[in-house]
Image (cartoon, rainbow, N blue to C red; front, side, top):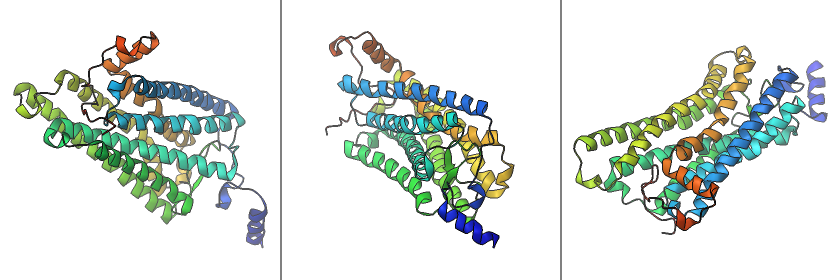
Length: 343
């Protein structure tokens, strides 16, 4: 009888999850803690939006930056703007409210968009690593890369992100509010076989594989640069190796930040898959997705702000200089390819 009443109640009252244990889920955080999280989200969102919009403006203003390789960075900026422009405001508003305030449909949309942009961002970072590897370590292949090749690689990153975002919507795992009650993510508290299989596959495809590819690419880039410095080779003598040294340094930072951002989220999912999800500390449950989202505002720092030539372009914009008053070398860190977008 009790089960029947619960079932009946679930059909006539609104709930955020099909799991009965979550219907009247209340936040484990105090309102003060919610406000602290909201303040972080608002601050991070504003920084992310401004920095990524600056990236897009630079590519509009300076035609020298409009290469096929730079299109990867432009797409990366769009993923960051997607998270900071949609995800951050909804989560911040819910934290200020003290609980999720956008309903079941809003929960599904919010979680799916965050997974979509997050997985796409990881894919694009992997494409950047592949581009660096082909340009520096395999120049004979890199020179044959066309705008169509870059478009295909970028499209694969977006389609991959869309696929993994839609799977919980259609039934492979699910989306639900997290223990804070103010944001939605993969429903790791319901660690059934669907959740375990989805989580293991996502971690393998979107964490282990990309990290392995990045390590392989940048390890070989580093070896190639060291070898060239000691004994220059004819096939890549025309590269600007002082700029490539900056690329290598930024690449190390990229790998470290990649691990820092996504490791907590992966740990939570693994813990929920093979342990008791009820034992996961609430603080860790909220810190994990916040760390993953942090890539939206540090990506511009790694790929743009840390680049002295891009800084020169930014200063030119700040000083309201005309395009003719600034010269930007075509051979930029992260952007050695000279394939124009119009080809």
